[in-house]
Image 1: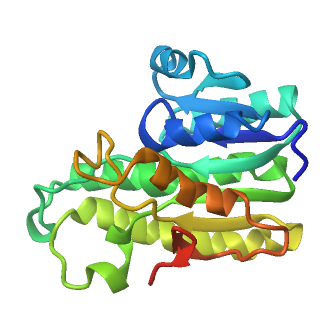
Image 2: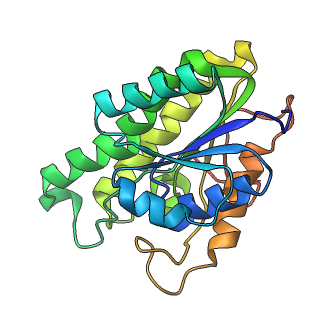
Amino acid sequence: MAEQDTVAVVTGANRGIGLEVVRRLATRGWTVVLGSRDVERGRRAAQGLDGVVVRPLDVADAASVAALADWLRAGHGGLDVLVNNAGIHYDTGQRAATADLAVAEEALQVNVLGAWRMVVACGPLLRPGARVVNLSSGAGSFGETAGGAGVPAYSVSKAALDMLTVKLAADLRPRGVLVNAVCPGWVATDMGGVGGRPLAEGAASVLYAVDLPPDGPTGTFTRDGAPVPW
């Protein structure tokens, strides 16, 4: 991808891994769109970051997603990188058999359908060679969490996101668009809590998928550039 006029969108990016990815991409001279449900928080987060544009975005709201796509179409005509970072409900206090299904529904709305809405709305804008990166988790891996009882809403939503990644990769491959899922690892964020790896390391996993060559893999699930079992 050419560095001039490269446009990237990062959802849920007013804090944590999303904001760190925005920071890293902005240093490249790209136009980086910081999507945030709370625009004021987004603006505060983006202070001092050249090339960052804050836009209102609630991935659980179809009208909000459509409005962002319309803005991109009118102002930029296309999109080179979409990072589906927005995520909610690391529900450590729940068990599947007794779960609050309202929490599960919200997790699915944001973690799976939010990413799906973004790709459907922005799909026509994705330029040849574009990258779509879905922020997943080892919590959604059958290989890493077999028999685990915790975080049911989060785990189910991330497992579904992995399958969505595979389906989207197959659909968009003919256009040269690479779609991959990434687990950033346990990162010290508001959701991950203290004790995790630094933000820069989690963001590096995301940037690996952003920076894949045109003939790079698609439909994969990685952490630190290495495969994560489905």
